[in-house]
Length: 293
Image 1 (cartoon, rainbow, N blue to C red):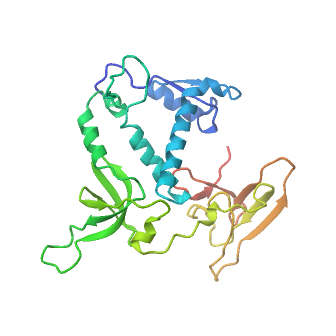
Image 2: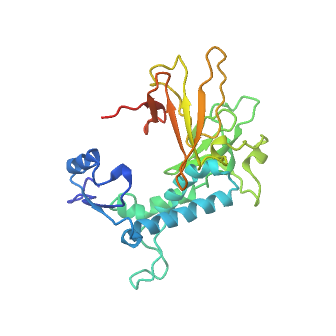
């Protein structure tokens, strides 16, 4: 977009979310620096933000359909969401306008975004190599030489796309590789990739479970030493559904639960050993000390 004679983005239409609200000074400073004007919609009139709402609706349908097609558990939703973005940017938008060619061969969103730098033929070639996220495949292992008496392929699972290359993920070593040499296998309905790779189904994360008191109780977690600084504590996740203390050298953190007001949602607050409140860092996901101004 650097070759355009105008700014790619000059007006940004937003809702009233807290991360970019009207009174957030850091967000407005960023807009002034980039020359972007912000336009906010009314919270009680969803129709004012219809394009964004419809875009989220299309994205939601594609993500859920992808999870169902590959029989994937909810923990894959983020990878499937990226997968849906990759496809939506490479297929033309359906339109009944008279200017649309009868054979449907029209410009793709990615072609328009790049001003033609990414051509239609390049996009078609990328779609040719596309493998849906969650598909098992036998991937060529370049580390195995031709003279070795060993398998030259290994089972891996498609995770994402990088142009024409497929990013495969190894369920045994957690390693990732980018390659164009593979044989993908389309699974029958209801078959999970773990059944093909011969490994156990992953257990559902406790983070996805919901306690009956999550929405009605107020939970306070008081951490014990040696976590005195509160700057290097792993993120506990939200909402907190279980607490397990494994360090036998320090005292277990105390957890108190109190009733909440009727009609109000529950909350979880984590304090360090000195009583300072800890919050989740949006960049790293770690719990850090909250500094009030």
